[in-house]
Length: 215
Image (cartoon, rainbow, N blue to C red; front, side, top):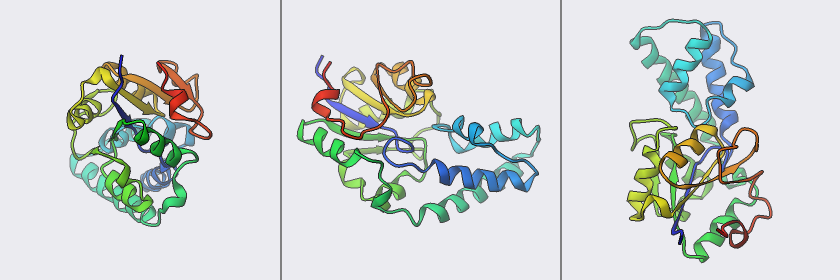
């Protein structure tokens, strides 16, 4: 099979904004007396803002009206935007730039498939936006991973069929979404967590696309 496109998640794959999400959610949780743990924050990776808040409220055994939820979502996002406003190209994860340049030279189309509604800001702050032919983020989808919507829309935007796409993901929900979309999934991170992926690498350090993408 001839693969034509590479679709990337953002957080934890290209840049690591998990710490900023953690700080913002932890601050919000403290408002109603709940301390979010790092382990719980791991379970929020690749999950939409609304779904993340619902999980935190469930963990805290806290009920809230829709009005309260809406206010908290705005508060969390405002705090998060303050934190990421200071991002710069130095926060791109090791090996990512060389890998993106490599797959461009090999002729792959490139898209972003992220649940983040702030993906465009992060790409611009880090200088990564120029590498992408299409950007599908939380502003373009209605369903969270593991639903395959974000990746299917990425393939559509690139005008390629799903089976010719390779997805790079660091979250279990993201890998599942890729597989449900009928795409090749390459996991970035822990092999125990990402066991559904077709291939797994710890990160992009020293990784050559010409070697990794031999199928």
